[in-house]
Length: 305
Length: 128
Image 1: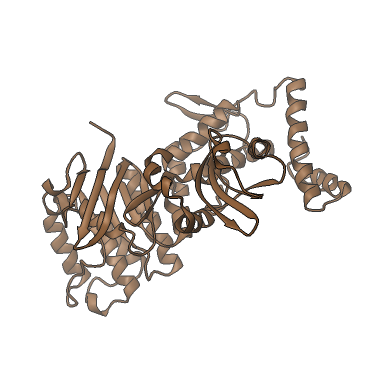
Image 2 (image 1 turned 60 degrees about the vertical axis):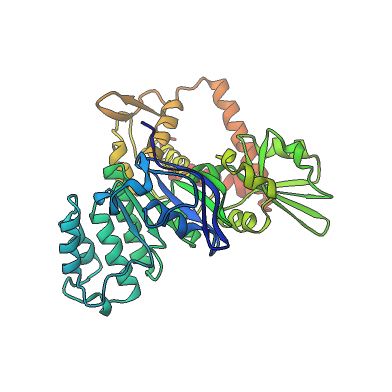
């Protein structure tokens, strides 16, 4: 039995003429929080909805907890939980009612945990859903999902509309769940600071394709921006570093690379005098590869891990 | 155990833990034979993946700072600091070169650097 809680192979999904997912292959192992980054329309929500079994892929394969996604009963009998934009309860439903409904649907539902989560944010269990703020609604839905104690939890922009304290509380609760149950989470967000706080692994997708998938610790340690006047000869980096993106500003060539355990000194010596190498953060990398990823990279996306 | 982590720095989390524990040992906040928190406990406290703690502890063990005793936990080792003099001096010279290069680059004069080293060493306690 493989360690992968989620596995997609060459996943494709078309909506009419629009290809939302275009040959996406992604493995996520047990006990991992994976954050999914990508511009609007990159295919993040489509991927989560396929994993939840809400929609079918057009092509390719998808396995969740070891079985094809669609063969799971709806909600995987509580083994998989999903919080997205399009699954809102009616306005008149109170958290107390939602708790009862969820407890009836899922054998693993933890009422105490749900009530604690609500209490932590000062939410009354009697207040109708429609009377809650946007952030409070997110909080209730995410708490319901966590209280199901799912083996896999899929959260589509859970921090949207939450204030900083609520964001931290939500991510702390997620981490506790993942650690306690050796559960797995896939979380989409646009906030890089959130990724840096919670991610074990980062996947970047763009136009339905996987651009990069790597452990966050690896990215912290190994991403460099290389600058050189006159142009960087990319093949010369071969073996020392993997080019993730590159661009040109006037006479200056700039590349973002993931170095394979070599020192900055070794990189500069290989490139020759005039080259500078510096450490850059995830935000710089994300913007850089979203804007300047080489076409070849999309094909070799999997090899970057 | 209080450890401050900076999630937004370029420094991997496991290495931040390694450095923080090294500092606590060097400054006497952790003594020989002191027991470190279990992997589970530290992961829960810091809200990080237990594997990151494992990596940090393994690195500390590799560096000879801690020993893992099966079934008992992780302890600050007794013999840390017993590196042969020649090896020790070379390691310190390497660190000093890196630090000086960086300090000179940002325009710090030598006197200032030495003064800061002295004052940081004093903060770590008299036995240093």
